[in-house]
Amino acid sequence: MRIRPFNEQAAEQADRHSDHLTKPPGSLGKLERIARQAAGITGELWPDLSRKAVIVMAADHGVCEEGVSAFPQEVTGQMVFNFLSGGAAVNVLSRHSGADVFCVDIGVKSDLEHPALITRKVRYGTGNIAKGPAMERDELMQALAAGINLVDELYAQGYRLFATGEMGIGNTTPSAAIVSVLAGLAPEQSVGRGTGINEQSWRTKVGVVKRAIEVNAPDAGDPYDVLSKLGGLEIAGLAGVIIGAAANGCPAVIDGYISSAAALAAMRMTERVYPYMIASHLSQEQGHAKLLELMGLTPVIHMDMRLGEGTGAVLCFPIIDAAIKLMREMATFDGAGISRE
Image 1 (cartoon, rainbow, N blue to C red):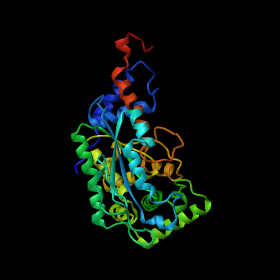
Image 2 (image 1 turned 90 degrees about the vertical axis):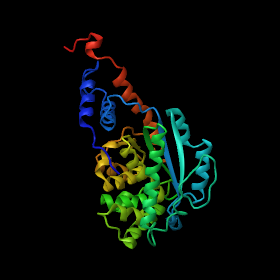
Image 3 (image 1 turned 120 degrees about the vertical axis):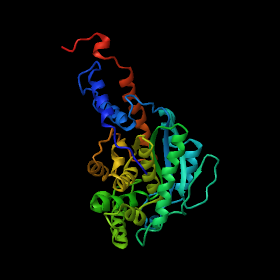
Image 4 (image 1 turned 30 degrees about the vertical axis):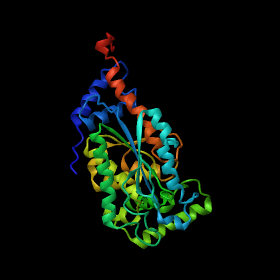
């Protein structure tokens, strides 16, 4: 897909405008940086990003057989219905932030039916990565395409700001494996506590990630190989969402650790997605800070969250709104008749 280069001219125009607002230069910190980025992404000084979508990709993972999660696999499908009924945390925060939630079955183990469910099922869950590849390469390409095509559809409906969300019991394990290979982190650094596992379960999880890497021998220089051997269908779908947002000239607000693993894979597929990404928050997953640092992304908020679903990304939406409103509505020194000296 063709992704336009970041519009440096528009970003510099935003910088100049910001410097003329009635405040000391740089005093609004990250708000100014967000406004600059939004201008560079869209080519507009204060773009209209009022139509917001959080795309929650849902899929199951064969690696759950290894006891890596504190919750049973059936919870994935059950949570999908919770999203669809509006009862999950991401639904509450989306209503608060003026965003719409789109839940996608891209690889749940069971058949799900609901009028609001978007079905893009590639297969019924991934293979157990501790024993073999997660999926075939053509299945990975289907999942990537599903994410890209959904953004295209939503863009055609007027959506201009996208957030990544996910649901998949056990999905911090493939995320950690992806990060270990693509970011060069030891599993002891990339593996976190997920849904709240104890010390022994954490050690088991580290061992599973090591075994998955050893068994599959992914090529660290080929993100498609890494994602097909170690990834999840929802992780691949989110990589597609990020690429699709960039191709449509829209910001992609990245949620926590799992979404960031998808973002890293998308970056390795095409570096042009990088300036289109906004890191929403710093997850409590221990590898997240190192991963964001490697990617050159600075999280907007620090809320000690580790839920997923897109909750951190959606919580960031009002801050993005505020950054653009400040650019549009705040007085300049000249307009307000205020002296700078």
